[in-house]
Length: 229
Image (cartoon, rainbow, N blue to C red):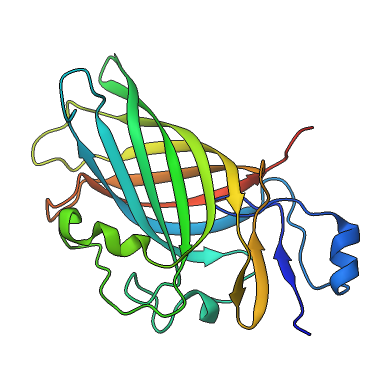
């Protein structure tokens, strides 16, 4: 009988609180219960923005990439080889629309709302590439089993007055709520990343893409939040 392992109450794309009774019923000590404000995961990725497709339509933005760290999962289980997007088992893809843009002095605030989907790709084939044109390569980050979905709102802060070519940083904060969490097999064990209704927040820092193929590249992390009843 396979030991079921449940990653608990973590955010960023993943984890939520399961009862201690349920954990003990499976196997004593088989899962760690992360506390509020524990780091859930770390990631890298890129963002590609698009203007409105038609008059009256909103501007859109996609963000995608892969996980470089997942609390409770070994590094060997994250990659099928050396760490890179080409070998990553866990990828994410965000779809979003722009809700509001506000300027204040040299700063600009952009509010978007969207969804995140986390994928588990058991056998990466090495064709994902964060340096490639998103129009060609974005869909490769949506391959695999869907293990979690969440909805979110985020705030981007940029300085639009920076010189061209742009070298300034941008800062983004997300507030997520898990909408689905599906069981999958990892290292021969059943794993569920999260619980419907679980919350987490994501913070990232980005910079313009030096290759000019995307609007920016970013690095960030997710932390768990308590789910209030």
